[in-house]
Image 1 (cartoon, rainbow over the protein chains, first blue to last red):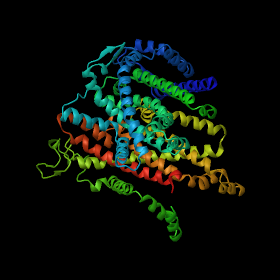
Image 2: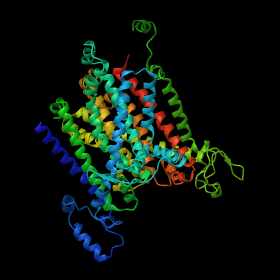
Image 3: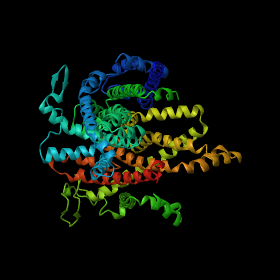
Image 4: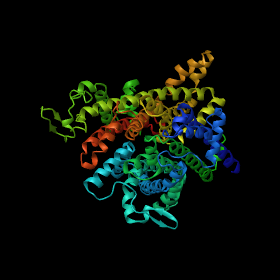
Length: 324
Length: 302
C-alpha cells in the first residue's frame, strides 16, 4: 500500500514537472517573454529591472529554475490589469468556482445514480428509454448553448431567476458561500444546473452500465435466490459494486467541472476563477494566465492522486496491477 | 433462440457492406440520424450553392436589415426565414456557411488525430518495450485532464487562430485514438495471421500497416465518430469564448457568441438557430456512433 502511494506520488511530481515545463515553454519561449510578462506601459528602467528579476538575461535552464523557484514561493507575477499578485487574485476567486462545482456535482450524483440504476434494472421500460434519450441529448448539447437557453427562458422570458453574478453571500462555520442565502441560492441554481447537465448524463450512463454488468453476476443471483428483498439487493449488493467507477467519476469529474466552469462562468458572469482566466486571456494578462494554468494543473494532479489512492483502497487488485 | 438459429441456417449469411447495413439498420433511430447527418454534410459541402445569399458578400448585406425577426421581408423583397443577425446577414445562410467551417475543422482535426494517434497506438502495441510504456503513460496522463482544459492550456500559451485551433483539437484528441488502436492491436498481434506474416519474413511496417491496422479499424471508426462530434462541440465552445477561430472564419460557435449580446433585448433567434444546427449535427453524429459501437461490441453480439 505504502509502496503504491509512494510510486503514485512520485509520478504526480513528474507530471507536475512536465506540465510546468509546457507552460514555461509556451509562455517564455514561443512568444517574447519581455512582451508577455512585462506591462507594455512600463518604461525602460522598469523593463530592465523586470528582465533582471525574472532572470531573462540568463540561460534557458537557469530561467526555468527561477520560474520554479518563484512558483514555490507563491510568486507567479503581478497582474497587469489589477496590479495585484496573480496568485492572490486567483485564490480570491477560487471559493466561487469551488462552490459552483460542488453544487453541480451534488446535483449530478443525487439525480444521476438513481436514474441510472433504474435504467439499468428495467432497460426496456419506456421511462428508461426516455432517461437514456435524455442523457444522449445532455451529452450532446454544448454547455455554453444550454446556458444561453436557460438564461433566455428562465431569466429573460419568465423572469424567475437572475442570470448574472453570485448574489448575496453569507458566512457559516467560517465558509462564505451563496448557498447560505436565498438570493445566493437563486443565483447559483441556473449556472449549477447548466454545469451539472453534462455530468448528469455521464453519471446516468455509468450507473446504468455498471448496473447492467453487476446484475448478471452470481452474487446478485445468489442474493436473490436467498430471498433478499429487491431493495436490499439494490442498496447493498448492487450499489456497492457500481460505486468504484462512480467514485472515480466523482473525483475526476470534479476536476472537469472546475475546467468546464470556465464556460459556465463566462455565460453567467459568475465571479469565479474560470471567468478570470477567460478575461485574462482577452486582456493579455499573462501572469494571471500562467498562475491559473499552474494552479489548475496542481489541482488536477492532486485530484488524480487522491482518486487513484481511494481506488486502490476500494479495490486491492489495482495495487498489484498498478505496476505497469 | 432456437428459432433464430434455424432461420440463420436457411438464409445465406450476409457479408461485407450488406451485413454492415443490415446490422446498422436494426436501429431506426440510427438510420434517421445517418440520413440527417448526410443532409448536413451535403449542406456544408455545397453551402455557397444552397444558401439563399452569401452572408459575407458585403455588397448584398445591408446593415439596415439588421436583427429582423424570423420570417420577415426587407424592402427589396428578400425573405429571411430565420431572421437576420446584428449586421443584417441572413441567418440561414450564415448557419450554412458556419456548418461548413465547423464540420471542416472537426473533420480535419479528427482525421489528423486519427492518423497520428493510431500510428502511435499501433506501433506501441507492436513493438512494446519502453516505447510502449512511455507512450501509454503520456496517453494516461493526458486523458486524466479534461479536453477543454488541454485546449485552454494550448490556446492560452500559443494564442488563437485557425491553425492553432486545429492543432489544439488534434493534441486533445490523439490520445483517444492511440488508446483504442493499442487496445485492439494488442489482441490482433497474437493472432495466427500475424504469425504467418512473420513467417513470411515481412517487414514490421508492412505487418503493421497492411495486416494489423485493417483489423483494428472497427473500434477506431467508433472512436472517430464520437470524437469528431466532440471536436465540433469543443471548437464551438472555444470559438464562443473567443479563444478559437477568428471572426474571419465564422463557425457556429462564433455565430452563437455573436447572438449572445442581443439576447437580453429579446432577439433570441441570433443565437438559438445556430445552436440548434450545432445540436442536430452533434446528436446525429453521436447516434450514428452509438449504433456503430453497439454493432462492434462483441459483448452485445447475439
